Image (cartoon, rainbow, N blue to C red):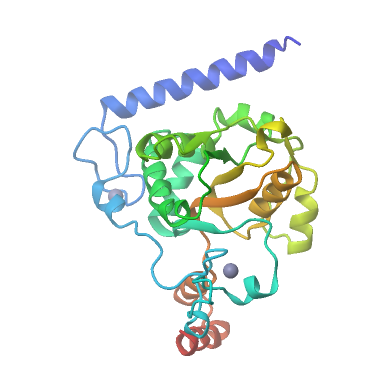
Length: 293
Ligand SMILES: [Zn+2]
Ligand SMILES: [Zn+2]
């Protein structure tokens, strides 16, 4: 159906984005992370120092979900994998989830620049980081080609944003990563068939309810017996990755792997809380972190 208002607003949004990106190419602005003036004209308005400060996750992480683990859980099991308390208890619908870095500081800002400010050149940098997280998984892949599936957006949201950030990041990563034909982008295989609310502030039960029935596989025959690498910008609670993995498995996928650019790390966020706020509550957390670590 022809919707003139919508077509007009899409065209306007496109023109605005084009003008903004042209402007940023012609006139160097300030770094969008630290605020200092940029010395060189760049399509990405972030200074090299801020980019250099973004690091991969440090320390021991759970081999299954990527959460940081305390030293008590740092020993690997007989299969060579390290498991956090939750992954010892739960059966995850995916094999393993890896992330490049912690979802805070400059990395969080960079993801926000892409997602909420439409700074598309950020996707290339984020794609490089995503590709750096892949080798950990690649050793476990089956011999046939793995389907790379970005977590989809609902079509209204995608239209509004103009792109799906996970897809742009996956494309950029595949361009940089020498997979020798072992990885193939399959963007339209997984669909978000229902709009969902933000997951922020919901309990784990509410998060699962919010996503129930939100995803569907478009062509089940393409996924049957195949291994899938699910790609997203951020892994927060894992509810989205788990729901997508369940839907892919139900459609016949042999295995689902998960890779994200960033991950929220519980111990890291507690540490940040201590620095930021209310000392009364934080002291015990801090001690627990210190003692536990
Ligand atoms: Zn900077
Ligand atoms: Zn875990």
